[in-house]
Amino acid sequence: MELTLKNTVSIAATLTNILLFLSGIQIIWKIYQRSSSQGFSILPFMACFVSCTLWLRYGVISKDFTMIFVNLIGSIIEGIYVIIFYLYTKQKKSVHPTVFGLLAFLTSVLAYSQYGKISESELIRRHGLVCASFNVINYAAPLGSAASVIKMKSTKNMSFVLSFVYFIVSIEWYFYGYLHKDNFIKVPNMFGIFLGIIQLSLFVFYPTSKSRVVEPKKQSVSANMIRTM
Image 1 (cartoon, rainbow, N blue to C red):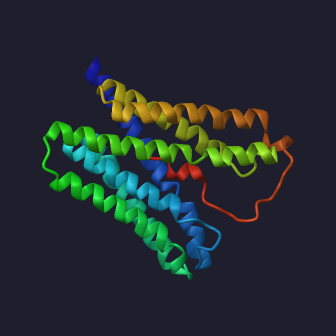
Image 2: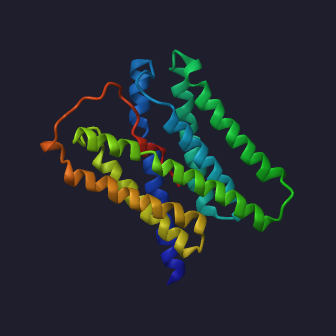
């Protein structure tokens, strides 16, 4: 019974997470059509790539096949997004601080994970703490969008579908962590569930059809896209 439930949650979380990775295609396709990344931010794609790579390493050291599989796919997809985004960025120096800063962080964590002279259990604990902390920071990113929605009294620039799906994904990964007794997976997704409730409640208080529409000055990638397992 427990094994079946674990498998069900694992499959559901994997499939929905991969669908979310693929949601970035819409933005990348727009960039390709315009031959320019102007108006979009590379941060969500870079943050997602770093997050997936960190969790991929966590899956390897903790021998968790589900984490390895979903984050390997995520790393590849997000890596492709970053490359395309960079190629179509005319002012490349403008994205260098974000790209190289996050790559330096990722490299240092992976190097420590690979060459640090500590026990396997301590390595899992320390690397898991880094992964969970990075996830919490990423989950907090949409709070800026929430504040903007409250200020403009409009959810026009938020996607209800994405917000709902991310809420479901957070629930799935929370139960995955619960069933596997892994607090590093469970705890950040508790925060994700809480944030999901906040975001979905905005659609109740500020429904698009009744909102005062204020067009943003700059088009940007949804902060939701930063969120990954």
